[in-house]
Amino acid sequence: MRDWLVVLWVGCVTMAGSVQASVRRDDVSETPYLQLAASSLYDSVGRISFSVGQSSYLASGVLISPDWVLTAGHVVGGNDYLGGGIENLTFSLTAENSVLSFAASAWYAHPGWTYTQGDIAAGYDLGLIHLQSSVSTIQAASLYLSETLQIQAGTMVGYGATGTGITGAQAGTAGTKRAGQNMIEVQGDGETISSSLLFVDFDQPGTDANNVFGGDLPLSLESLIGPGDSGGGLFVTQNQQTFLVGIASFTWGILDGVADSTYGDVAAFTSTTSQLAWIQAMTGVPIPEPSTGALLWVGVVGLRWLRRKKRSGLGYRI
Image (cartoon, rainbow, N blue to C red):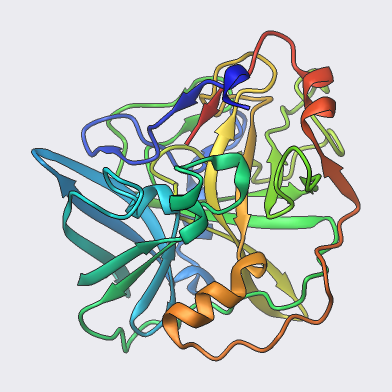
């Protein structure tokens, strides 16, 4: 598979570098995106910081119990896909304008991430962080338990720099929690791309030229993830309850071959429902069995279909 992929390992970048979260519509101000991120529905999303050698890094994660954080496998994989080389790992949350920081006692990449040596198309890009002390003032996110999920709007929450669909991410704007929305429209076909991967595309206002799949009308707070957003949460609200359904993994420059979170790019999230058994085994958090036997979606996406949609090459950006 890697003979046709360009893999860019920039999900965790130096804090002074270009990381991004909620790259937004060019015709909407940043204010409503910041307001959405400040909603108590997303208090569980925090900032991860750590060092490897002399370099410092930033990523995102979601509190799923008082002492466990769910993030991306490539965030905690370190030098050897097992977490090697990572030091001073902390998880920070914001509560009523106060920042609460918690040191990590251990971190684990999903065994599938390790086994496949970081194959992001395999659907195992998940990691867990165990905190030294419990979080008592923030409500942990509720995991989505049903394996049936229809096409619907999702909210993406994470940390990093920002920009618009025209400019892409802008350097030097990292460190603020932002959120945006997009339609969760397809999953991997289960053959060439794992069915554990959920996809959204970044639609451009006023044109359908950069639409990859699904409807071409952007949401009012349309956005896309990018580096630094890695490990952040994808949430849906059903019956007045908000659930975590995915963890930010990578973006794909499917139309122009450049994964910079401009219009027309695609983002992928690792389904949390697909790995409930591993999460429960590691954390001990009681999780009921999902209600059905397989993820059911209106649309599926595979490499053949995506190849027909591309214009000038592909690029993965984690």
